Length: 365
Image (cartoon, rainbow, N blue to C red; front, side):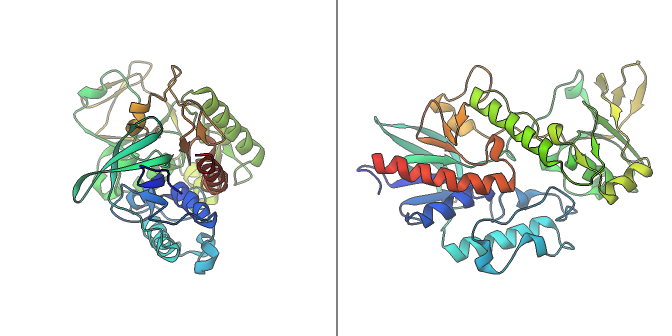
């Protein structure tokens, strides 16, 4: 189905939940994996961003992981997965079985460095792998890189002068690394809460700070109406080309028994943000000082889009204008797992939509 002069019809960048969902539906629509569409994945193994999550994270302690489309053929489900094992191991195992079952032939580790115009209509995707720099020409690119490779750390006065350790979510490994230290955790989402509960009893002192008030939901699970509203805000921002807002800021945090117990113990009581960072601690708005050995920034991520920079898709508002899965500025570029599709269930639904649109675009070439 590729046009004359291209190596393949579609390149899917990223083999996490979004990329695999798109691949499943491309295959169902008749495209041949490894020939008419190619998956490139930066990770050394299967599992997408999950393979890099911290060791103590378990399924059920974070947002729900939904099954990939067609996973029932493998006889496995995240709903019945072993919750005593690290989530990273379970997801990597299930995704490995999934890729093998459907024969997706994912190329990894393959780090995409750029996507550029190749002549009048085609695209050139350059990536590096174990053999060095490679390139593949294609008609369409589906970007499913997610956000894990683009951590966001807000700037505060003195941040660069802090002599202690600063760790972002994507660098956090295990609580034992902070044994006996005074640790400050920044962020209002489930990752921050997970770190606090894990560090309790290991760190000598724990402090939680957030930039906004935390809404703990009494019903113990995400409010569907609030969730729909948060997704709508994501979609609105994506269409307008603005930076994407946080999902959790619009949905709140479920007050599970584990979280309620943490609140009762005084571990999950957030303080307002500090005003500045000193070399050995932080200063609060009232001018008082607190000594801190380490800062854990659980402050989220931004979409990983650096490799698309040559296509000049960014708007002045800071984001990329995306509607119904494709870039307004270049309909050859599709986005899976972007904005309103970021959740596992959203990525699965979007996979079907994007695959259909990709095949429809190819039929016009």
